[in-house]
Length: 299
Image (tube, rainbow, N blue to C red; front, side):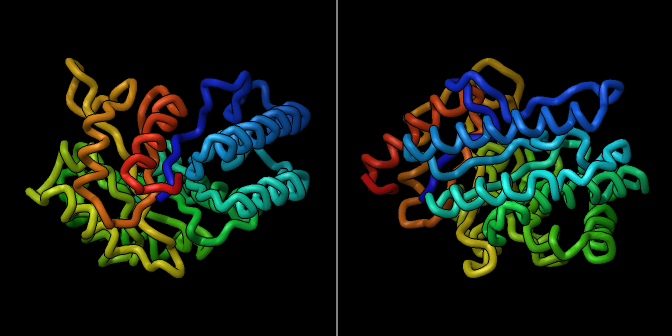
């Protein structure tokens, strides 16, 4: 089991998500910002290795405006060696990496421009992982999208876009995640049946929207969609409900008793856990310590 957190490290004095306004775009500004982002990413990865956190989600903003038509610069060539060095560090330390495009990536949108933009963004992020030389166990995760008043048709539209418009480089890495409002685990299983995509399981979303599946059974159902040689073991997101907040709001800091119960309930099941908890590495360090006490990660 690997445990990690997404995108930002609050301990370090840098960000790998620096960007700028579209109106300020220039190639010089782009190069400077990407250099800063990648330098910070290397520091974050070093921090994670030092603290036993071997799962990390890269920021979508490593290369600002990478999928926007304003960006004509060949950043792939310019930063090829930097990406390769980062990838070598990741592989040498047996880390696992994912990316999670923003909410504007909606493959089943009825709007053709939205779909076009979504495909471009997915291709950019797949290119990042390819430039790093990472195998296809490094994944891109998205949500099912909207239901648009007719979920069966929306699922079919997703499948049609998947098969007709997505490049192979994207399809090799793409996963779908159950969400907290529209696409349950069962809906994601339907998407898997239509496309072959593995399912990234989110325990908190499953608590919000489900079809009565017990947690352990739900984890096993999601895990069954992963082909170990191609995909690796199940990736999942973990969080819990913030007290006294709207349903679906993520907790600020890990609730250790709940996490202990989840690990106990899923004993003997293989998975890598991404903590979607607001204080990032602080909770991840608590989680890894707790997992060690249960023998789920090496001492």
